[in-house]
Image (cartoon, rainbow, N blue to C red; front, side):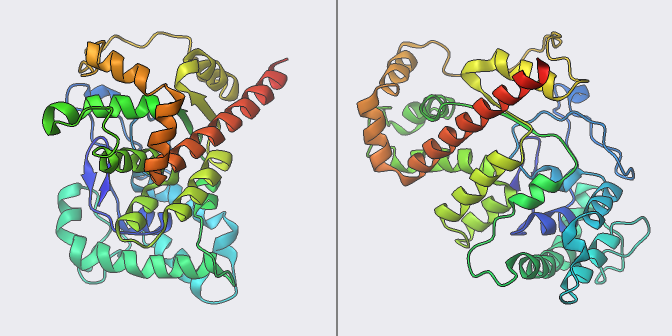
Length: 336
């Protein structure tokens, strides 16, 4: 199951290609702010939409317009591979995204354009399509390689601009502990490393998979990929798939970098004031204690030793900082 911030779409595909063809899903507007979540025209070959969300990287594979995806694939080198019928098979699946083209033989029907129809067709159509496309995609990308596959080149090749803002791992952990009310709901205090191991793992994997991609979420859930495999793809994505990587503690620099990278984005303008849900951690004494504790180098060391997932998260954050510094220097030179 692939979880999105705006809704939940069934998808067990282990590759971004399978997710793009077999798992359509529209962006569902947030009920309190419906005008903030507009989606692309599903029949257009372009998508002039600025999308802001909490979703994992790769969520866009579900809702990018069908002609857009087909044109993208036809322009990639993978569509032109002639070593076997595999490349042509993948291309033929992208052909099913065309209007009035049969997507599902079992139902003799086109690709669904709403969630209700998709859920009805899921077992008979989407699941077998996912399986077939995943096998073809793996054959293409494995090509005489025995090691695990990183799908980062797929994400990097999409003709879109991604930005992200990444938070210090230990600040992230404190925020997650309070947002999910771990002490209130489960009686575990923030300094109890042993009892928090499972929560550290859960929160760190959310952090890792959000950078790695939705396909990583599925492969991890089914024990197809190791933590190391996910780390490799997430690191590749940080280095190749984001036009701007910002750091939460340097928010203004992030806005400046976006404005320099994308000339039509004016991030100096104020957004309309929305009434949003108050964060559960705001300035309580317990929160301030935990915030200070989690910035202690000795406590950070102990947490890291207790959780390989936290160690992986720290490594990815360090990579994000490196990329951020490189991008900031590059954009500074471009603007001078």
